[in-house]
Length: 56
Image (cartoon, rainbow, N blue to C red; front, top):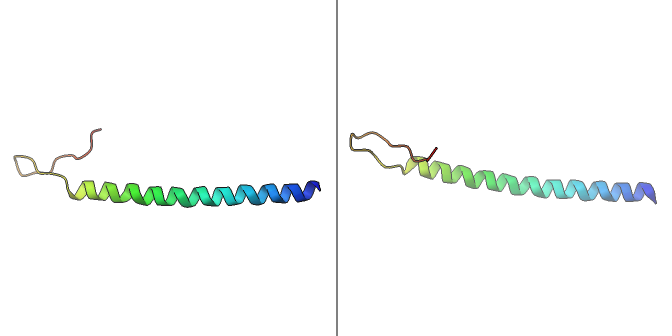
């Protein structure tokens, strides 16, 4: 009974980790797309140069 519970617990942990990693990949792709859009759509300054689109 003990080894069966260990195997089931391991399967549950690995399934949860796989789901979390898949979600994190989608979050990373969304952040990359937002960053690229902000980089490409930044405004120009009065001198014709590009301004920073981020706040830090």
